[in-house]
Amino acid sequence: MKNLIISENKKIYKYAIDGEYLYYEGKYKQALALFNKAIKLEPNNDMLYSSRCKINMALKNYKQAHKDIEMALKLQPNVNKYKNLEKELENYIYIMHITEKA
Image (cartoon, rainbow, N blue to C red; front, top):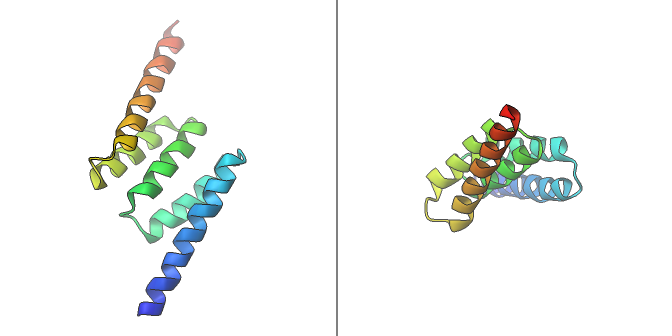
């Protein structure tokens, strides 16, 4: 059983590292697929949700990005980085909403 846990942790770590690399390369859809896999294996990891939030923002999937940052905050409510990301996302959504009406 211990080997299975270590194996799963290695997979999650690899998905996250590779996903971050793809994100910084601008390959957002590929990065998103890897973070989806990582979250499926470890659904209580706040950092995975935070990273997926940034990817969804880049893809303009604002509704999903908001769900992701809310989940990260639910898991770790005192992380200022998550609070700041949530504010940034809400400001961006607000600006997008106003520009659509203009």
